Figure (cartoon, rainbow, N blue to C red):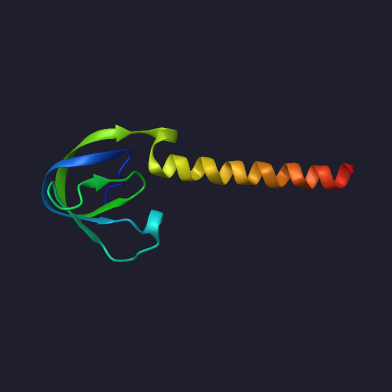
Length: 88
């Protein structure tokens, strides 16, 4: 399965099934279509079919980028707390 590098809206698809387990934890493949759940998210894999999408977000603005940014912020806050406890 090809890895989707960006978030987007599906505008044309042919039996498209996506593995969204990297973001949702759900192991079932999700059927996508222009009229049926057209949102495609970066970090997910195409398991079957093909399609075309209009890119709506890349990098830190994509859903996976936002998640990674939040996780990085949480790590930085935890590190700050540890430093404060040691120093004080």
